[in-house]
Length: 84
Length: 130
View 1 (cartoon, chains in turn green, blue):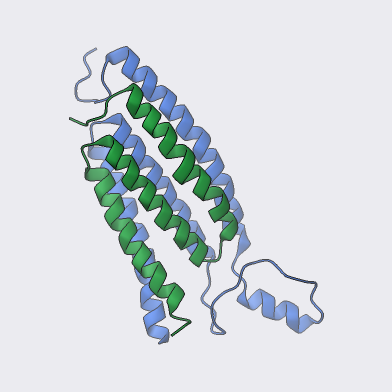
View 2 (cartoon, helix red, strand yellow):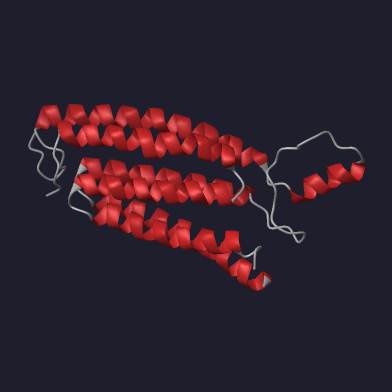
């Protein structure tokens, strides 16, 4: 059972990432879309960790959960919040 | 047991394909440039995950290990065992570079979207009047 655990975790996280991607693409409120995109990035970081790439996780987490949502939130603040 | 693990990993691979498809759908059909930008970042992340998944190997000896040797090999069998169980580090190095370059390209795109909004007063490509 213990050798099944990484595979089951990768499976569950992959399903969550599909849902987060769909919600991020379909959401009208762009701030919520950014949050869903950050959730998807967190899922991908866990997948990278389970697939034995911890150095990628160390780069990917600050870039894709920290900097990119911050910059996109600033972009939404300067432009428009709601999609038509 | 082995078939179940294989099925779960194939599901992860298929989920990456589905994510790529959803992100491309968002890039092509959504009128808002900010939404296109978000979908583009998801697309690049999915492609990077593909590279990581190519480098991963499911060995018959068990789960793969990180491609770092904890100490110098004492015998040729140690080295052979390490080569047979470790993941491929080359896609990881490429993805590391791709993430950093992608960040720079995304910053450039953010600047372009801000200039677009100043010029046209909107970020929707359907409402642009020249």
